[in-house]
Length: 120
Image (cartoon, rainbow, N blue to C red; front, side, top):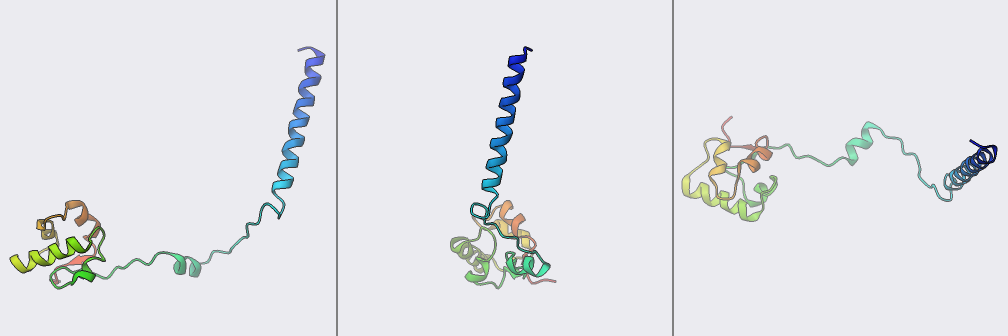
C-alpha cells in the first residue's frame, strides 16, 4: 500500500473513531438518556405479574361467568356447555367437554388443569 493511501486510511479511521466518540457522549447524556434504574425485588415481580387464577371450575355446576374464565371460552361456548349438560346430564370426566360443539382438544389441553367435574 502506498504511503499516501496509508495516511488517508489512518485519517479516515481517526475521523470515524472521533465521530463515534462524540455521538456516544451526546446520546449517553441525561438529556437523551432518561432511563432510570429500578430495583427488582420478589415483591415487585409478584405485584406486577399477571394474576393467574388457579381455582378449579366445576363444569357441572359453573355458570356462564365462571365458564368464561377458562381460556378460549366465551359466552357462546359457555352456553353450549350448559345446554349440553342440561340435555345429557353431568360430565363424568373433564375430557367429556370435547363432546360439546365448539370445544376442541386444543381448548381442553389449555384448560385441563383448571376444570373439574366435582369428583375428587
